[in-house]
Amino acid sequence: MRGVKETVLSAILLSASILAPLEARAFDLTGAWATSADECKNVFVRKGKDITFAPMSEIHGGGFVAEPNQLIGRTAKCAIKARKDDDQTLNMIANCASDIMFSTVQFSVKIVDDNKIQRLFPGMDDMQIFYYRCQI
Image (cartoon, rainbow, N blue to C red; front, side):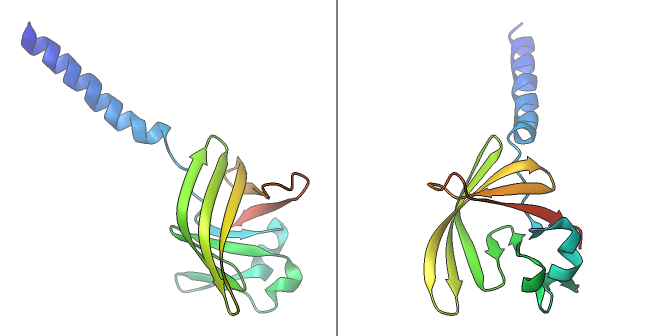
């Protein structure tokens, strides 16, 4: 009887360990994001495996490229130091560097769906920017 209980307990623990990562799946931010889905081809270009900003991209709207541990804007590169997924909100703390300064920035985004996010600005409730995932 003891062997049956151990087998059942092992099966429960194994199934819980297999299902847990699926339930706690973090939002995949990786990719190119633009302020207008219609302007993706004017904001980003693919160079081999890399996605970069197109020449004159700033006249077609803003955007950023998200990699697993960094966010890349047209004028700054940010290393993600902390990340917390909370239901439909993703909060990140990043160290950012541009040509003229270094700063620590808090990025908060609300996940609308897999291809649309809303950047929130803590302390400024009426300020927000929508970004759309680009298929480059």
